Figure 1 (cartoon, helix red, strand yellow):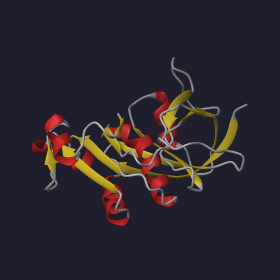
Figure 2 (cartoon, helix red, strand yellow):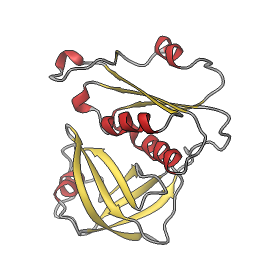
Figure 3 (cartoon, one colour):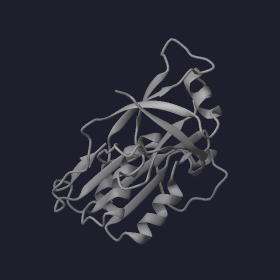
Length: 207
């Protein structure tokens, strides 16, 4: 049976990318990295893809709300979602999916993400921090420009607070950026991995 939730807030987290926070039903639980199917209720417009989309939960299980983040493409679903007023009700099914944090904390995690693919990793990274789990996590995060990079400031802050977490952000189109950048440039490749992962064979990789 679908559950009902209420939109609490929404905000821009990068150029063309928004995060949406929803109330979490008291009976709902999920594992970090899982997804939900989110359904608009009586939307003002629709298209051939219907009123339901699958989203990774960017929120950690220990957080009090549910959070998704998405690129705001020009589709009927996302136009309606972007314009929903706070307090609007939606329905969702789930959680679904098995890409969740491994249990053996002796094995480090290496997370390779590009763009909005970061959302399930935020859930895992925040859960490790909130629960003070011993997992060591290395995030390699590729985007075109800092302007396009969702949650970059949050990961930079998390790196300072959790000694077991490191974030390597890299930009592939700084020639098109108006912001300064002193970090890595270019796509994630073997050479970059070798600089930040001392033993390539021991981690669990998430891509």
